[in-house]
Amino acid sequence: MSEQHGHLEGNDEAVQAHLKRLRRIEGQVRGIQRMVEDEKYCIDILTQVSAATKALQALALSLLDDHMAHCLVDAARQGGPAQEQKLKEASEAIARLVKS
Image (cartoon, rainbow, N blue to C red; front, side, top):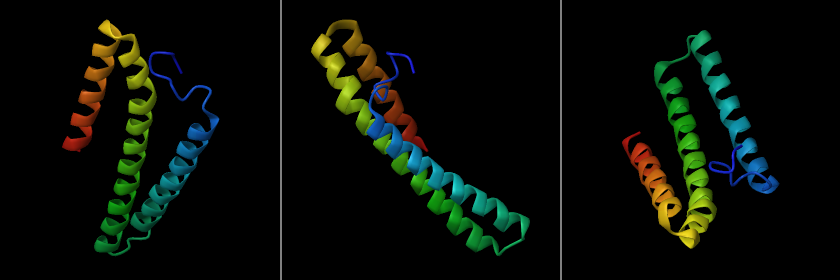
């Protein structure tokens, strides 16, 4: 990851936690795929889609929290254009999450 976008670099604990969560989500999505292939009841599939969506949202919030706690705080200490850029990025990311 680049320095601009990568506070996770060097933070093995956070990376491992995110990867663990992503592997679980991947398993959920594969399960949904099997349900569709097996022509399971639509409502049961939708329930699983909802669970996977919530898991992705939780991951997004965790990543946003990490970004705010590290990148945004570092940028605020620097001030100037770096601070403005990081605040803009965070605002845009939050807007995307709210719209999803």
